[in-house]
Image (cartoon, rainbow, N blue to C red; front, side, top):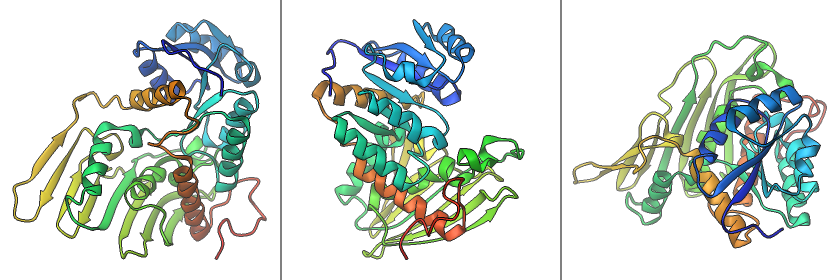
Length: 341
């Protein structure tokens, strides 16, 4: 991995959609980050984005950004159907990469990216901002310390009311559409953070006419006896909350659990305790950027907060869910089951 200057980390942004804009807006507020280039499929889109954020270089193709030697790390913000191609292009060119979630379409693609990063000695991390959120990190510390005893159940959901027309990317199989990879990745990742990879996966879904999942319910189980009841939806706005129940208490996270700004600890025989974030703006995207820059300066090729083994495990679980509900994307059709029986 190329040495990164201690004073400022130079970022490239690949794609110009909503999440790219949100992340870039947070980046430009960090004094030790500098956005030096942006790339899109069209030069017009790249230039408009560059003008919006004061970025000096705009490229109308991904390859130009990937080979820009002035870029320390590329943030890949394309739809997840293009993550394998976009992140792979950057890794092949020797760039470090922060890649949006869902990390790829499936575990096979994720394994290819991880292998490529290790081969090149480059940094690679999934942009799972929830894992970098200081309040979620505090919650994990409390659970690891046994504050509610042994974790028995996890509940989490993420649903949008829609409606999304058939032409929307969330309904498009070619773009990895459906609730699971866009929304369900958060409940699944939350359960993984607390309990690791499940031993069994059960799932049911309602599919659209395009054969992507409109809503999916998941029941994950672990050999410890713990269970996770998870849900995602494109057809109903849910509470988007989470709860963790243990043998000696419970922790509740209200609306927006994946970018939490507070949670409440309930312990048997004690008054509830509320934990709140120091930064009430919920601007959690900056925390993943800070972690990436810390890793680059330390010469680390992956983050202990978002380890690649964990990303691969989440992708295996998402594959298992899709196997149970019968969702396949172009290129996967005609293949055997995504996961072993």
